[in-house]
Length: 289
Image 1 (cartoon, rainbow, N blue to C red):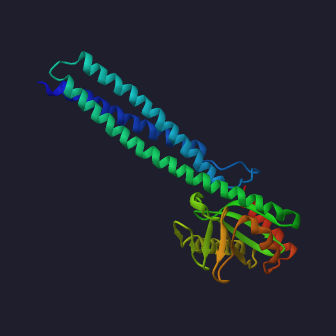
Image 2 (tube, one colour):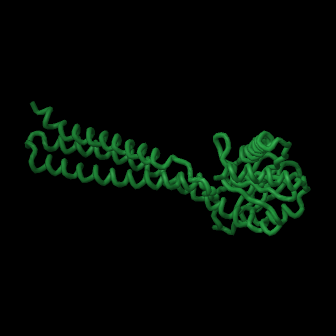
Image 3 (cartoon, one colour):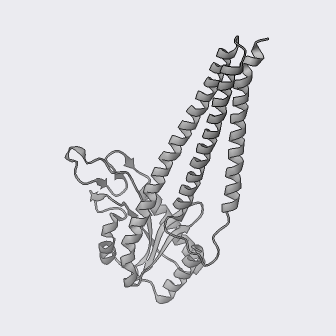
């Protein structure tokens, strides 16, 4: 006879938490469907647009989680107060303990999810700031006649920056890592590059260079198909905030954005004709709108 009044408040809280999750997912799906249409023609993609869209999605998710958690907190407090003041003397202690256990479990899961979202947001924000640093460095190429395109959509991925100019076509990939602390007299942040792998102080990156090469290869094939002429695209990796220490001359260029002017000044040209440049530029402009 005492079982129902003991477990009823906890059951109410569990059902409420489930309904909050269902409602939250429905809101996310509705927002996704509302924001999924492509930008209107004539609106060029901005640098790091994919990252900005993901940051906005995470911001909305954090807001929804926070609002849902506050709503659940109000319900939890109300149920526990009802248990303590209005419950049967024989069941109020067990009922309040059950409700508290449900609340603790819910908030432990919520805190885990919010912590993951905040970490992902910091990572995306760092990536976006890296894109902006590269854009600023690339702006010096415009007076030289180069054309720069950002966030070029491809088959399941985007190319951070594509540069077209008198020395050829280049696909730039950006890699960002948090720099080590400066406590204890730590010197400038340095990444070692052996032509294939980037050795950061706290991690080894063996995929960025390979990814940049594959994306440059894809762009070369795509431009060749769409323009009807063979186009050689060269890969470049930019690492904002890092000093690059090369241990071999082999491999694609990996540079700090501040080195971009020097890179394009000294890199071996693969010149394009005026007609080729116009054809490539037209395809990229269509792709980034």
